[in-house]
Image (cartoon, rainbow, N blue to C red; front, side, top):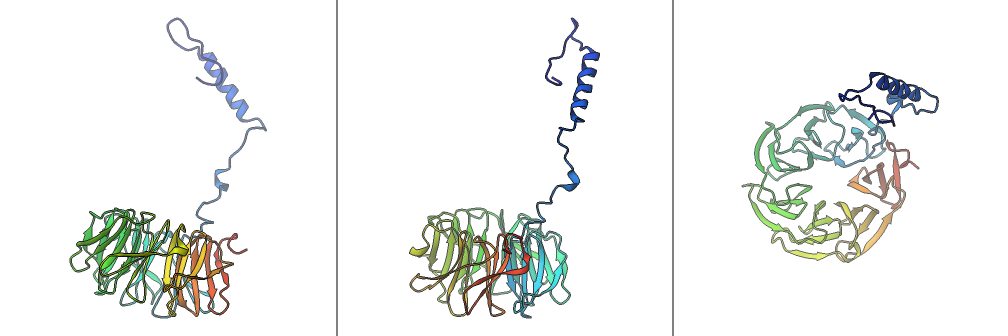
Length: 341
């Protein structure tokens, strides 16, 4: 049917050509009337132009802070916040970052893995063979190998040669959302179905925890006593890194969607949630304080003890916390208009 009137058919089933022409002309005339909406495609806003999510932060051996956001990669002076360099990367949606033993910065993006050389602020390698190009997490093991978590399993890469050493594709929970290294050298993997412990020597799965409150693990860090702290959509858990035993659920955080975790040099635990940044006493689980005035309440990444500040990535950009006042402050430029208010 063209227009609002049914087409008239002749006895042999053909359509009156004049009827079609009349209806097409009517539609064209209607579209050209002043009341018809005109869409200027070239003026449509770019949805990535206002996306300031800061999903990854990495302090390096020179004292710089690397900021991986959905605006790309920036290197800043964490003392002053000054942007030292912006690095042109193949995909500016950066959600994971690690520094290897010789100081190179590895980025995880939806299009794969990228290696950046800090001495020249340039990409020096990319496009490694992985179980999937969508990189969600990265970490360096005690031997210096790079472990890469994707939405279809794990991979281990030699940073120097850039060679894929091994993969763990039959990963329970499939998606390696978050990674952390235990003091005994084992790798803990947070997946959609809980926790998996992997031997870095053999790449074999040696333990599995599937009954986590909140089910999936989305943030992890290792505490000063070697325990693994795990953030889930339903709270904060503590796991014995050696035995794999679930030790406790932190009462004050029950029901909270925990999205980022990091210990500072004073052994305080910084807990990022969808509803704010909290400072926690890890020994009794007490919340010491809540940080106001960050670009967004939804926290994605934390870098403590960096330039005498706690640097924080949020969904609306980069911010920092004063270690003397505990107050938050948005960064001057790596922040959305909303986050800067």
